[in-house]
Image 1 (cartoon, rainbow, N blue to C red):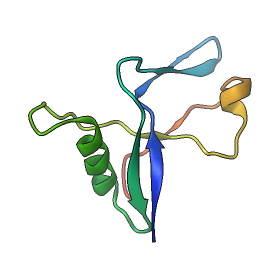
Image 2: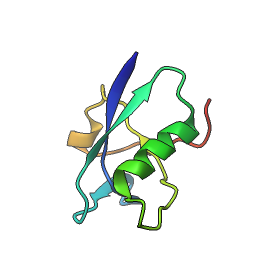
Image 3: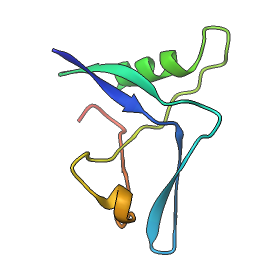
Length: 88
């Protein structure tokens, strides 16, 4: 079964005891397909295809994850985001 994930381009930074996410103001968010059993390489490929055309130089995305059931994005981040580095 396939579902979709919203990808928001930007960069994480830390300071003042918390984490901040600065959204890239030059790019729009994109929706990419995800499915059970998908590898990190497949997800990175889907993200790359969404953000870069075949004529642009593609960069390997750095992906992080923030659990959807937390309110810290609204109230102020106290824990770092989770970076995805392997299929585990």
